[in-house]
Length: 293
Image (cartoon, rainbow, N blue to C red; front, side, top):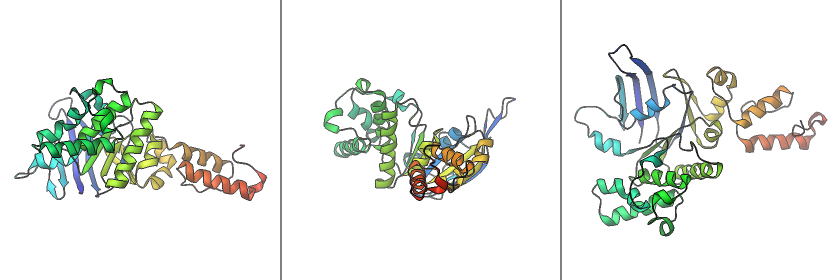
């Protein structure tokens, strides 16, 4: 399922003295099966952009095409298109309300008018995706769970709708390291096993380095950069000029290069940096030890 964004502009409070341009002539294409990381400083337009993709916001001008159909076009079943795109807001656990985990996850499929057997299958599938054992958690109250488990229940409620595209806005915000890693592992598996198209908004460059196949860098409502993580993170000076960081491994790589170590400029993952450092140590490069330094 492809998404094409054509010359998208969005103004808040349009027509008033408080009118603000949040998106300014944005054009992008998102291909089926991509894992897109959307990054940018606060106010850059990230959240406004993703809220257009399932019709929560209507463009001031421009188009959102879902498999060639204009999301806001005449004679288009907008509701059917929106159901194919699942949106998980920040802190989605605040929207839990049912008395059991299973009932909460089943809420969306029930509203789709599915059979009881299909709903049960959807609930079990979604719980498996987010690593929650059905027999252990299905009849528990979601409010008895940890914060990370509650968030996984909320994400499962979206996955039970079987969306073709999953959009997440800061999915690890506020979680402890263990809860954060569980969410990231779950998303990694969902992308690899189910080939789900995923768009994730995050301030964590390390999370983006781990998961994204392509990055979109937003600044002042425009697309400032786009490319693979390797291409984007190699441009550290430009990232810094936009008020953004790069992954810790890329920062360390740059520091070692400045000390004279022969390392590629585009390393951004811990495992690949480690591999190159080990090679340097084994080769005894100039008798120096980058780890010791």
